[in-house]
Amino acid sequence: MSSDYGVLSNIVTTAGSLVSATTALTLGWRGRASWEPSEQDISKGPQKVASLISAVSVALVWVYLRQPEQIDWTSKVTIFGAIFTASFLLLYGFVSATQTYFREIGDSSSDTKRENVIGGFSLVPEARDFIRDHKTVTLQEYFRIVSYDFDRVWKRSSRALAKQLFVLVYMGLTVSGTISIASASMLVGASIIAGKSDQEVKKEVHDLLAGIEDQPSSEARRMITILEGEVAKLNTAEIKEVAIKELVAVVFKNAESPTAKVREIRTMVLESIMRLRGKDLAGLFIGRELDGLDLVQMDFSNANLRAVSFRDAFLIQSNFEGANLDGASFSGAFIRNVKFRKASIRNTDFTDADWFNASGLDSAQLALSKIETLMACPVNVDSLQAYLHDSYEVPFSAWPTSVQDELFQTWRQYLVPGGLRDVVARWNH
Image (cartoon, rainbow, N blue to C red; front, side, top):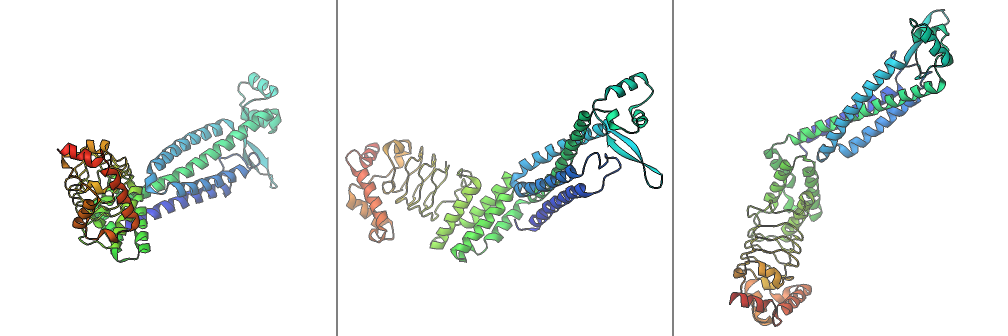
């Protein structure tokens, strides 16, 4: 999170990727080693192709696996890459030991030099019969006897198959090895980020959000986006939860007279938290962090808010549609124009909360709530407007027309004979 650890982690992952990519390219364009077959037997084309595939693979690993949240996949790639590397190395050693021969070539100074060549899996009849009849003669010696004539020792198809096996094993060894190096460097970088302490994470959250309430909306959103990205890099659920809870503590602090800017920032932070954590917010607000807060027009739709307390909170025009509010408390909360359609409110406390100014409620929902906490609904529209006048500072006439129309529609539904007003009155009788 923009600390020394974060910088170091980027250096480690980038350097590791560069080293592995450079190694792959160097393998492709270096000279032929003495233990390898000659260039005449296997061209350097496959060698170069293998190095290019390796370099591209390293680039893909760096793009998709360098972030700490991908550590599970990075670990799997590293482990399987190491397994494949070891397997290809053993196979390459076996093929080299069983299928590599040498021939002596004279140069202009009449000196001779040895050159590695690839044999084949199947001998021609002449060679097979000679080896069978002369048990003390090795295949290498017979190769020399026939003046290093390949066609008098191995079938051409078997030599071609042996060459292709060398190519495949060599390419597999090069690609899997370089990918292992690159992904291992990603693991090192991720472990550095994961090494942060709770206090370090909390301090960084504070530093990133310093002065956010004094910034223009665009800058505040940018700061939250940066923080969201940094929190997402934390690869353990525990340390990520520490960062999110600190984010809540910083932004959802009590404000007696919140400004429009504070409301906007809280909305942005809630959206960010849901992107980071999903809609399971029950564990995040278990300590009554939302009591008494101004939470105007917040979108809690479909969220898990089981047993969360909204005591004395100012929640007008917030959205709880489809939310799990079982065991939650709205005691003393202001819930005018709050939406509860299809919300689960089993054992929910509505003591002194104006449920009749909230929309989307039905008798089946309320029957599962703590019905003894439901206050009596005013008997008509005039009484409802009088309640609003006594309970809310801003007069009804000053509210947007859409808000007024929504309330009138809600009241019409609740006040019809047999509607929620009558149902609640019967329960409380």
